Image 1: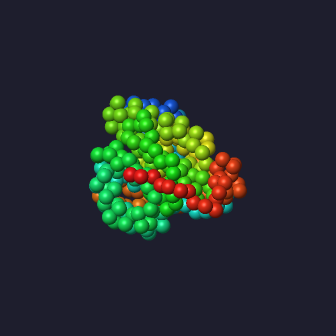
Image 2 (image 1 turned 135 degrees about the horizontal axis):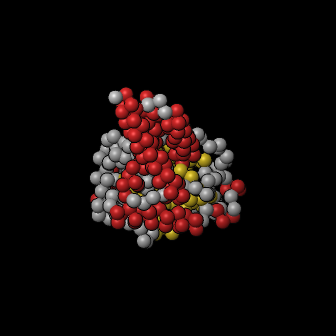
Image 3 (image 1 turned 60 degrees about the vertical axis):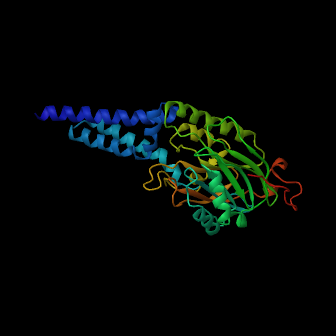
Length: 336
């Protein structure tokens, strides 16, 4: 009987360990199978089943099994550690606060969004799932009193996005060939040129949508490579740091501000009981992420993200990133 129990423990532990390590492999390969994409959201907790498998191997007196399980626990923990380690601050320019929120089909409390803009002293607001009705409510709540410049692409249900800024916006445009409709604009802050994007990747809820999600993240990264100046992309990426697609976007010249700030594994979705950090502010590497936190917005199914950043000084940037007339403001602004 004891032998049967030990054999059962080994079989169960091996199955648990195989599943956990399989998810680690999928994490590195960027698998786009819909079930795997969903399971990868739980990777921050993968050390727990690996530890359980180690306990079962210990009960079965399998030293090899225990050693393999403990190694897996260490690897699972190691891939999450960078999220808790803040990067050194090297930028010497102006501070910039960016707030992003998914407006939940335009149902999020507009007055609460404007209150967050005021309380965080946000310089830029990025909104996803922006509808015409939500734009009207935001304006009625006084958003244009604090962020008077905007480029918006409101759409029914989940398709729309928008940008609001304290400084004038130019070159506003909708970005084609995405599942939802991102908007992009340019602005200048103390002589430093910025490219701002409010981004919403497709939700990987069906196999077809998962393929679009993969394309959205890859296309956004391709566009980021060609944008001038300092780049800030804020929004609902529908991806976590455990999806290779997001890591590829926020690397090699770009960073997830939360990771750069050492903000840890705070989560933004669903708002009532968050399980995954789907909402991000991604910036060029030269930007310091001072502090990044989630914020609650009533009637949204996401928590918002507020990122307190410091820009590089204009003299530390290439001439292509600096406004040659930095004593003057940019003229014009985006329209809705």
